[in-house]
Length: 167
Image 1 (cartoon, rainbow, N blue to C red):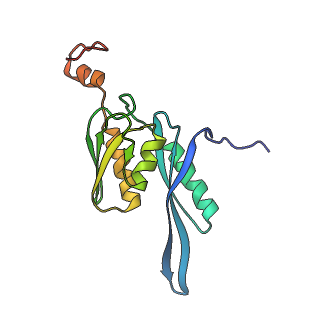
Image 2: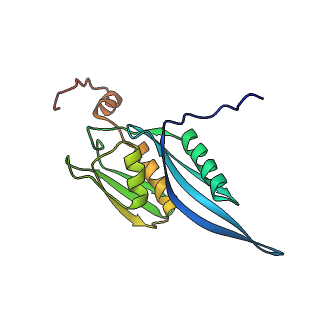
């Protein structure tokens, strides 16, 4: 029997959150594990995935596979992001701002993992509202999808932009 096709494995994987969830049924409670995982290449791609199963190994595998399928490209400006951006998901909001070189990532654990795996080295963040790791990770990805480079903005406005010009 031939092996099934697997996704690329050169990505780094980090677990964001593991929690035990229960479903109440007639005979009692059914316990499962819910896992949130981030996968990235530490250059410009990152993805998050969620998995739920009776065993931790199976839940982690599901989360990793889903994270690799939902990877997004992050726009960089050197070691930081091009501009400040606000991401929302449910009750969670995250503000990500560019930082000067050497600042590092000032963020909570959930956001730090996603930014590091996406290749961002310097950023300032602030969480508003809910700090639920699941929604906060979705809000962070939402914010990173809103990033645009100077060249993209100039093209949308119909302007000609040369690399190195200040205007």
